[in-house]
Image (cartoon, rainbow, N blue to C red; front, side, top):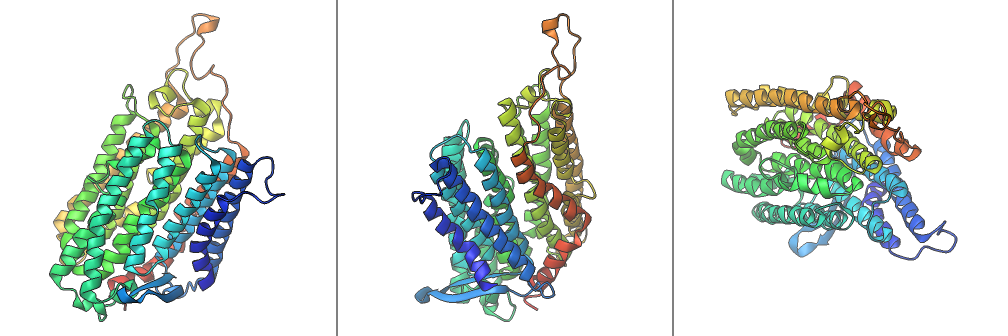
Length: 529
């Protein structure tokens, strides 16, 4: 178990280095580009298999206990240790990260984004995987910060070198926002470590441990500083403005990993650091965090409604990016309730969002490959997509992703949002219940607005525009007479089917995930008891 976890974090780095070397004779295949893309599939596949073995070997009877731990001294003078481990909170995120990266590698093998050498692309993808896996596995505050920052450079280059229109500006905006937030977060982490005398996250999570050295004022200052960095990555309104540009410009696999994995690093930090280590500080700022989360839910939905209307020239990738602001608002609302119900809902919504939004960004990439555009007016025009008639399996899958994203009962998106609102209905002791009831009502309004814009997306793209009667043989426009589109290809089935299956399974059997997270959440809230 120890080797599996440490190997999952280190192997992508070794694979990234190997990707930059010439392919050995006999392994080049048809050409060197194919060889390096196959190398990416192999490495990410091995990492995914290792995380599955980790999940199978995990002691499900004690999910609150850190397992597969590695704890060795790294920088003794500063008390920094290489401390790794997973519990019921981090294990699902580790498996999700490995799964999405593997699916992105498979997709890229058949549909490599336009840009420079595939060697650099595969190397950056593997470095990104290593950084995200490390973020969810490390148990030292300084290592957490290093892993948190490690993903910025590969994602910057994936957007800037393999992205679409406006990629340079979007990449700079992404890295500047996150770097500035991270500088403030580093100050908060240093404050915690210096005042408590340790950077060990497990020791700091216990009431009778070093956390006792943190006064209320220190906790408040620390949670504000750390929270800013985490809120930028989450992303929390109004620190979200880098996200739509980054998603719109990013290549398909970049958008999948950005939404499916990188956004979870911020919300995971709130649960792993702010909640157990600075509970008094988080309790003080919880109403404000909940308010910003609730505003983000409504704001994201209204922005999507503005984009989907006819004539708005809205971009479908941009719309899904704004929808992420709303969905992550539910996660923040659940965390801010500081109740087991709300936090479990937030963790469930994290996983559900990764599965569903990852699928949606894959589908949008497939649409762009087929039609050359993600502009909603183009897709829904008189010669637009009309996917039900022209590519029925593709259209049906897009409709499935949309109804899963709006929180249809029986699919993964439902449980996290419902539990987050239940948490707001009965917030932790000391939090204003009338205020949280207001936030819950705003979240409920957001679910209605979410259903409205996603159903409009399905109506416009899957059904096409209004048909007009042809006046001549050459005027027979409209979706009904438009030529057929290529339907789902074999590699698309391979890359997208696991997300569909897991979305259904998580919706029908939520206890599989909640049974992992709930004991660990109870222990965090109980001060390690």
